[in-house]
Image (cartoon, rainbow, N blue to C red; front, side, top):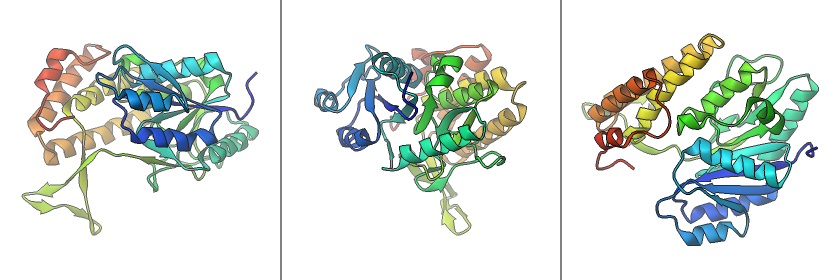
Length: 309
């Protein structure tokens, strides 16, 4: 039996930068162990991976299989070598505060004591800004569509719900798992006082005919994602909708509405608008056709732009 509060952190890596080593060193005192998984980086810095091996278990995938497969490999390794009660999943560009785990576990204990089946605990804010919450009830808040980075997943829930959906590859992996847990009667609650520091992506000014767009006196930005990411967003949204629209229609409806707004912002204010539109169309087509896994190379070639990363 695992100790009630034992936690192993699992980080997914892809071409990890040197800064991730110090990030893992800062994380290590707050968990029982750390597992880092290199997701088939084409040209990894071997010095970084060697340094990570001094403070974490390093798992290396032979090919790039996507974030779901990378986190699954880390979770399986962690549970095979130890018996943690919780798995904390993180991206390589995310960081938690010194009291994050303590606060998350305290929230989980309070919720369990109130008879709630806690499947996971997520941050209640990112970079100091509250995340979108569902309608509150019984004193415990739930993020509407929480990101997997910074999520503390119960090992008991993993036993029942299974691992992450590797067919999604990237994008909506967290959404699908949240929906799956809720479908099985688990709650995905927000840890009180838990904040995640996370890189949001490349910000570009939102402009109309050269004028900066402002809301309530604040200048707005468009956060750039490469077009191939938009392909996954569109494709995987179709998969989620088919799978959960009957069981969670209100959640699916709001999620689709929000994604539509974000896509419209990209098409209107982002760079390479026609390429983004093509990515959305191709992703929607492949979603309807039920395709999963890595984006086909011929499709990715159509979506390449000079500034995409």
